[in-house]
Image 1 (tube, rainbow, N blue to C red):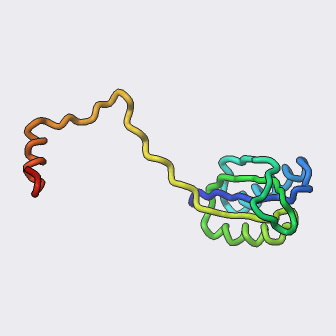
Image 2: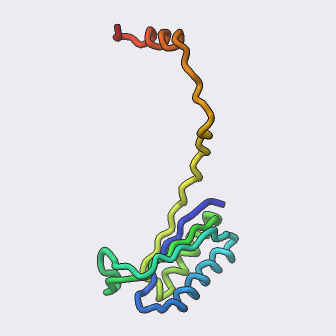
Image 3: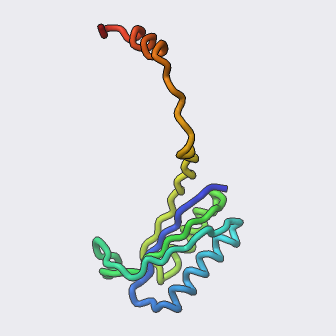
Length: 126
């Protein structure tokens, strides 16, 4: 299972209730395929950069999911046959960032002898 970001743009004439139902339907497709949805973000109605299917606006929805790689093809098939969705994109999510060192933890100090040794090892510097 891998982390994915599933983004889709719904037709601008879809009302809020239909958009919520559409989002639930997409989450159901992910769950039925063996995945889980971690978070759903609704960005609302926004202007598109260029017309898509003669539309200048659309409802943006982003889902952050953990799902098997093979489920991506099935989601694409479902997105293509759903008329309310005018554009979609499925991308790999970024791996979690490594834990930062604690603020109180000191970095190992470099002794003066080690600094001189590393300076002597660099050729061309005098």
